[in-house]
Amino acid sequence: MFAAIAAETGIQLDYQHPVTVDGHRYVLDFALPEVKVAVEVDGLEVHATRAALDGDLERQNRLVLAGWLPLRYTYTRLVKARAAVRRELLNVVSQRRHPRL
Image (cartoon, rainbow, N blue to C red; front, side, top):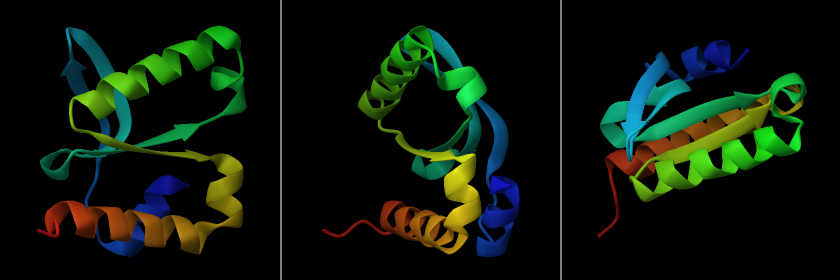
């Protein structure tokens, strides 16, 4: 689902992009490494437990502290707000590529 939305933007994202932060190896669902934008697609089956939430937040904080900007989407958001997701991706990549001084 997200891959189709990203394709509509013309932005080429890496799928299952490996990254190491503070000695921890993570695989990002989608990434644009040159501007450190990560996109995670979160499903309830994998992310609905206390342990999963704790791990997700720890991982997200490590990524942010290393300069990554994670965007997180649920399947519901991808389906119901496709245009908004597309705009968000375009905006964040534009901001990262052309930061205001």
